Image (cartoon, rainbow, N blue to C red):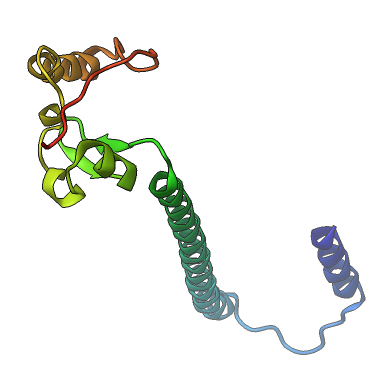
Length: 157
């Protein structure tokens, strides 16, 4: 709507305009208008880049704040859970564990972080764990994940 309004006003004004005087030679006017057009285009491009960069930065900050809030919320849930929760990486190394897991296994978090989780497993689970993990990562075939079962684990003592 604004585009039509602006174009309508422009052409209405041009219809009523009268130019009196001697016309400039065609080559000189075009050269001066070309320089002005280049300056206007450059300024418009710079303004557009600045606006785009500002919008991108604001969106990045908003997403980072949402991510931080989500992580804090998840960490609060994990920390206050009554079940022991241990997270590990693709190689089976412990990344973190909550307080309930510390109480269950008798290990402090700092003692297990970076070590293989199979340390908490009795045989025959211990020797087969890394193979199961490698099979899951290679094929996506979950033999244990999502299956309720009762297992035994080893405490520190």
